[in-house]
Image 1 (cartoon, rainbow over the protein chains, first blue to last red):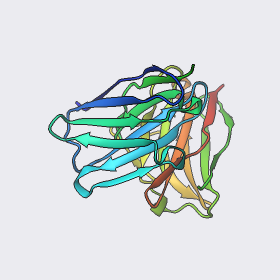
Image 2 (image 1 turned 90 degrees about the vertical axis):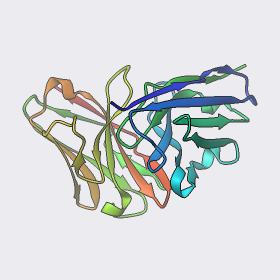
Image 3 (image 1 turned 30 degrees about the vertical axis):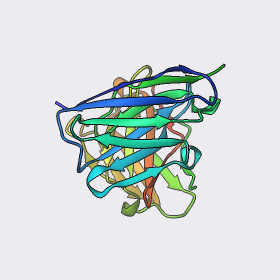
Length: 112
Length: 109
């Protein structure tokens, strides 16, 4: 059974940093696309970034380019999202997902 | 960045049929946009219903089908059930970038 479990969310001040983690079990993601999505409270879904380890491809939504970095650790079967220079508009539930399976999400709140 | 559009809300009667659509500001939606459809119920994480235009996951009820229709991606629900009331999102791919539509709130009433 495929499972994805996010962690690392919390309250951070504007300009601060957080690192989200996603523990993946049930499959090896090296040759699969892995995504981070987010959903601000009461709003729709937004794709944030994705990565394909075996071809070293990474893509980001324009609003996070230069601030967020997606990475993976095959040995730990884990996906990460390093988020720097956080802004209020980054407040959202962040989901780790393949194209078929989703985690339950972790809440990131950017506020002073 | 492209803008993806969906109907904000739709209503279907139990047992009825409804089609949700997904358009692109760049023009006709094709299979090359790899359309996806996701369902999200209140308080829950989304789940993937349809991938690559028309392929169901193993957990997707057969009453859901995906297609291309009139230059848009389409999700058709045939024989709506009360449990199908949810928000539905489409996602299109643009050469590495991905864009969600704003979502359709489906009411079964």
